[in-house]
Structures are given as C-alpha cells and as structure tokens.
Image (cartoon, rainbow, N blue to C red):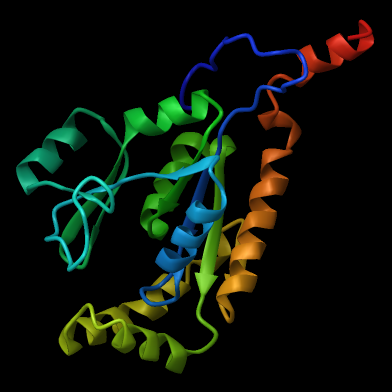
Length: 221
C-alpha cells in the first residue's frame, strides 16, 4: 500500500475504510472525461486526481482544476525526485500524477479518480495494485468514436486523425483492466461505474476497521 494507514479513532459504529484509486481509461472520444465528471457530481466521497502536464491549456480548462500546467523542466524535476506516481508521454506532451495528494486521500479513506491512459495504469498497478480499480471505456463503434471527436470541436482535423490512428493501439490494452464498459449510453455507463465503486468499497481488505467494529459488536456495543 502507498502509505501507512491513519490511526484516527472513529465512533464504534463507523467502519474505517482505506480509499481506493479508480482509473478510467479509453481512447480519445470514448467518453471517459464526461463519465468522470458525472461520477464526481454524483458521489462526494471521490475526488479527481489533478495531473500535471506540459501541454497547453485547451479552451475552458482551468489551471489547478483540470490539470496543473507546467513546463518540461519542472516536470523532469518531479520525475527525478520521485514525486509522481505515474507519468507518460502522450501525443508529444508529458502527463503525471503527483504522489502526495493521492497518498493522503487514501490514508484518510477517500477515493481518488484517475483519467489516465494504459501506460499510467500499468505504473499504478506496479506500485499499488491493492489500491487500484481499473475500468476501460470502449466506444460502441469506430464510426461513433470518430463522430464524437469531430463533434466536440476541441482539436483540428490533423489532430483528430492522429488520435483516431492511435485509438486501435489504445483499445488493444482493454484486457489489462479489471472492468470493461461499452459506453453506448451515458446514464447507463455512469450507473455501471457507480455499481463497481460501491462493490469495491465493500471489499473486506479495504474496510480496515472491521476487526474493531466486530469486536465492539461482540462486546455488546
């Protein structure tokens, strides 16, 4: 596990739980960003891991909320100091997850949502497999993936073509994930993710206060 568990004493009827890292990955345009936002709006026990990146902000993105935008020199410093849980180069830009905020959240029993690719997911699995829950999002069809990329109007045609060319390679990693969801309908996909999250929260190994709770029951409390 990433960090020693907190020893904060809670009321006997509250079971201490270790947080989890939930990863959503997909090829660009399959809907993981929209699904992430819907999940965050529906569940206040999970927060988004804000990645650092060397790419320029897109229209409407806010520094510190969507990403923390830094230059290549600062990014390399974070890597050299082992302050990133994972990092990757995607479409010529670097992305990474700061270690400290994630470790603090897990120790406090809060879940962390990651919007990262398969490379970052592999790195998280190497460092903290017991804390990881990974979900791969697939589009319902190749044509729909292309339509979504063009309809969001965030990138020029050459960038869209590059993303489409990379999508097949990204989708080849689906079998490395714990769960796979075909995003045909946003509402249904969100509910599927919420069901996975609830199930994973109830796993015995994450309910670190169960022994204390059961002892209280046995003592008649």
